[in-house]
Image 1: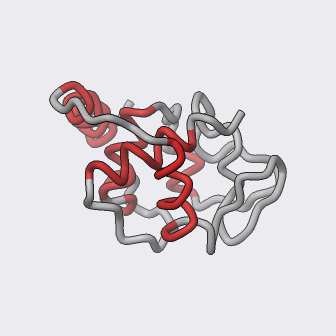
Image 2: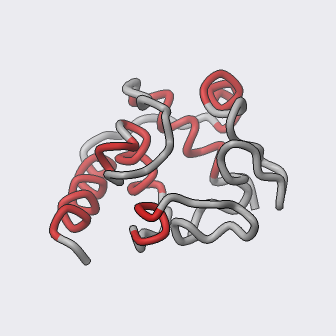
Image 3: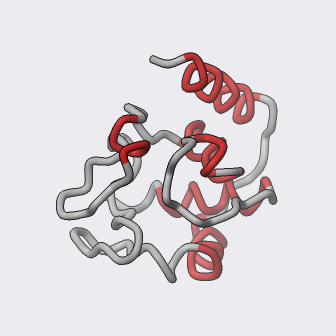
Length: 123
């Protein structure tokens, strides 16, 4: 693992371990529609500008078949978890430098937690 990636993983674990927020997958669905649905779908094998987010939990970065990933995402070697997604969603381009994802980030912690709860239902 590269040094920036190790720092990223450590920050993600710290981020989730220091806050106790209720999570709502229903609220997360609304966050997804407002922030993510233009570029991502939640149906299996349905890629848009971004890859399908179906089954994202436990999946490696850069691994959705049929989607053309940036070199940065292919080489990140990250397995998506709640902690990793939490950190990534704050600032995708900071978390994975070189990503082509244009989303600036979701700064609201409650919205991130709700979104992650929703994404965890997609399996």
